[in-house]
Length: 338
Ligand code: ADP
Ligand code: MG
Image 1: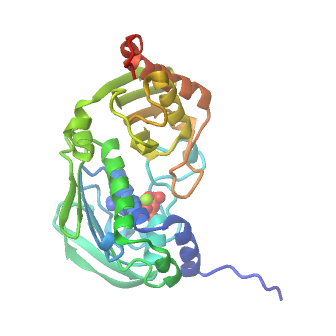
Image 2: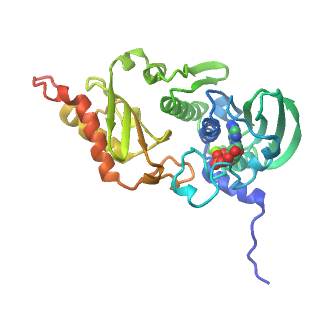
């Protein structure tokens, strides 16, 4: 008799959780992305103790149907893709069906959701991957996910967590970016009851920039806009006078997803060319739209890194559009240009 065994589901989920749930910010990201995918127009995020004690995300999206509640927490269960063809044209932020089972494997989760406006909903609780409660609950349409005691059953991972301040920093960084990516959604973020962010959700991205970086920064931004057969770009980039010591102020959004792209950053820096002092970087929010077939988001479980099929063209386009917006300034001669 052989010695190879298929892992039981709970163990498989715990292993997957190692990749999907690196830290509290990963939970926030997964829950918020689900809320965005559900078409929410309001997303409230409340965290306690850097998210290690509690992460609660409440949305007014589509909600989860009663009969889908439990299966939503099983592995590879998703409503977002069905066939391999869908994998090459992903329009949602999620699609792997891994987040909820992974989170439930390493925390205590309570989920109240309703897919209708009848005031009726369902509540389920999961602890370390096991269903511990399943009952009717009053709820308006939308979903309310509470994740507490993250990593309570994986002490090795818990030990690896940094200070509350560091974990909170990762959470707020993510929430700022997703709010910048979706100015049409009203976001709020609180930590231990104190407000860290509130956006209006009226579609005004400059207002979100003001909420995240301050009004003076928002005033120093120039709009960028461009079209291309394959891409469109819109957003804001900073006047060359406003610089930062690192690239963290560059937010790249592709088809509604906040991503990290060295290629896009480089293209933007190229556009500034000599306008920036050495080792100084601009602030930017670039929203790039493209056919989903031109970008592979299935590179890493966190989906922060993606692959572009025509990267050189994209770089050229970004550099061109940003360069145009900066154009007039570049030609202004003078000793203190830049
Ligand atoms: P994925 O997002 O990759 O589909 P998840 O594990 O994150 O996988 O979620 C599983 C399913 O649960 C989703 O496909 C969706 O149908 C449902 N779901 C999760 N969160 C929400 C939410 N906030 N609102 C509506 N449906 C949700
Ligand atoms: Mg998801």
